Image (cartoon, rainbow over all chains, first blue to last red; front, side, top):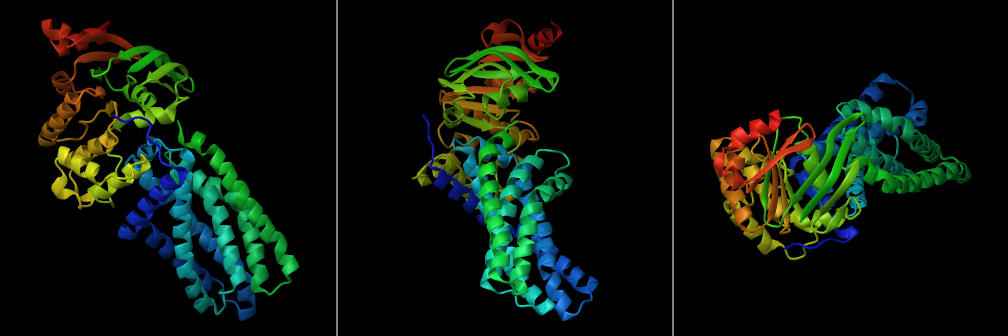
Length: 229
Length: 232
């Protein structure tokens, strides 16, 4: 009979990511919802803000991050709801693995979905707003911002999914906490889009890196407590 | 195998379990019976390490909860009224996922063995969302037995099953019992419990109100025993 079986942390993380990607690429339930929502937000902004080219460039960073933040919340909520609705979260919690593996597995899956949506949204945005978004610096900022947003979002989604008002609760919890990441991401993105001096952009980039590390570390430490009754 | 001493569970000001003493010997099949709200699910969630006790001691397969929760999790298999499966994965993929989480490296033969045991070998590549409730519950039992646990915990496994699915589940549970595993099953369905269990404990208002083995019950029937326990 079974004694204490226990996979390594990396194997457990890989198993969770594999499961999430496999299920998602079969149903496209989560990514398609995030994508449609993102495109709608971009279109609404495009028609609502009838701006000249120069002004458009100045609002690009704000519009982009608003889009990513709203779509990201949708994805984070759904990703945890899938686990909760069929009791699968209990299935994960019953496995003899360190619970940080569950956090990192879900975090990597959520980040993959968010990045995928961003990869599709960026060229569409570039065409609609006539702005070149394919700058290495800007792409790096988008990745750093997404890491921080998803890191804290995965933790808060695990917390809010256990309540009856999960759909409403996640944005209420997430936006105030992720405000610092979003602010730094908007500043850094704006800096690259307006061709600012590197010294001006360096501070928000450093802040983004610091927020990423802090959010991942804090989430790693408290996830076990958050998911246990 | 399972030793629980003076277990108390509180949710805020509400005390759900009020000092439970409970012991299960290896190979015993205990049915934990009681009305809705008696604390059966809370008790089982504590045994499954999904919830922490407020007070008291819990020891399963030689490991203490919550201090040695990972060892306990490796020694138990849990089945609830929810399947704990992913609808967009096939039966085989679901088992493969859980096999990886339980640290299996060579799992293909074990998955085939489990699918044969629960009678789903021919549906191994079908998505779980196409399965009936009964088939999902059988696969859920297979998932719980994948790592060959010493202790099996069932929380209302018959909930939502029709007559045919219940009969098939009976067969699977009898197989589990014959394998010599220690089983604790919560239920408010006395007929299934009577057929399967070797001991019956009645949980009422957060305490074990009465306990009797199958042999002791031969003089009276389970329903009478259950009603008397609830009235006492």
